[in-house]
Length: 233
Image (cartoon, rainbow, N blue to C red; front, side, top):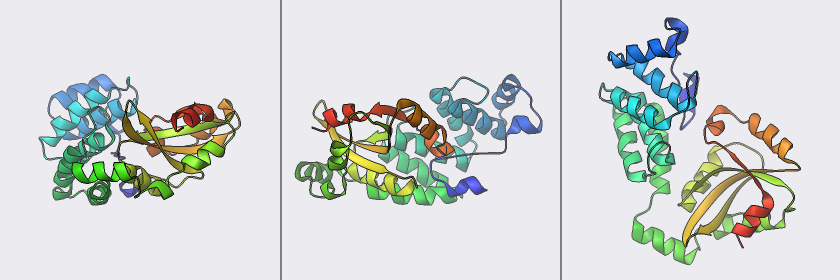
């Protein structure tokens, strides 16, 4: 399937398009133990398709599907732990689920494991890196953001605690004007992946509307450049 070329996205052929016409019918089929229905219901909750978006319920149904040996469910759970969607961000648990998905035949799980292996560092090493700030300062874009007009708008795609993870994700997303910046919140280091510099809020919304599905699912946050310039001082 074409979607297998992309990390962090899971699609299956919509079950309701084939035989079920309502979410309620899908729920009953999933509750009866139908694996395909469980996956479809999880994806529906995750994407907010024909139902109110609920990541916790998506996790619940992926866990149900995992018990039936689903590679897609294991991969989805790994992605959720990696990005902190519906669960607390945990790279070790993400790696565990990705490995399970790989054993079950998921091709995308291998790519995800490669990303997480590069992103994850033992605590003692990560603390040393954060203290020295030598490993990534030249790759960060704080200076570029400071030079932008404070009246512009920018899109924050995500924010993670690991600089290398943010820089790796920057390489994966093929968009113009991608930035990674470092800032601190309550004494903790954070690294944000940003995109664009728009003249108006309306222009930024138009840009976000054109994002591919894999970015839209990250729930992009449109921010005034001025707010980021204050955060990185």
